[in-house]
Image (tube, rainbow, N blue to C red; front, side, top):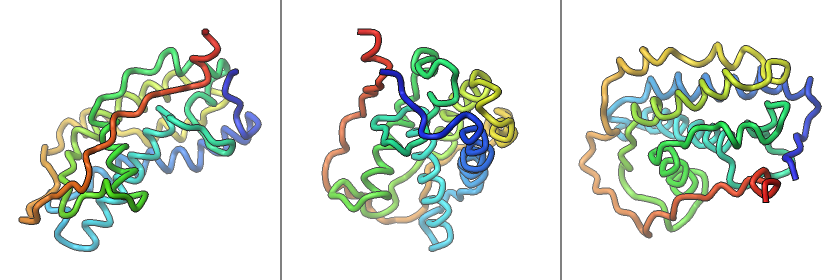
Length: 195
């Protein structure tokens, strides 16, 4: 069975102009403002956590593992709702790991949380997401995706010029309470249709 959007086409387009454009803007803008010593102050930690939250939202949008009835996913922005499943690039392992870390270490209280600065490699996450969002924006149906989304995507050059660093200059030891979960599988409804 093909995925069914929870909104009609005109509402889906309006949703993208407001909410999806916001996620893209926040992911790239906040990501570019994360400092290398992001664990040092409350403000710096809040900036890092905002980046991680928007990273998780976009990864779940492009590569959903579970789709609830009111979720909005990338597939809904194509006339053929299974087109994105067939054409989407394989996500970098760093993004899948970051999504898992966000689920366990920020969004939910779990034993998978780390103590101390978890050392996020910001530039890798920004440059890993960039081509995925560009591919989505360039291939989505123009009558479903508002151009505001594409306007929020920075040039690859801006991201390439960023310094490379792991967050942290703290001396806090990172302790993982339990091993990281395995990488998620993508059980999309489109796969069932081809069987």
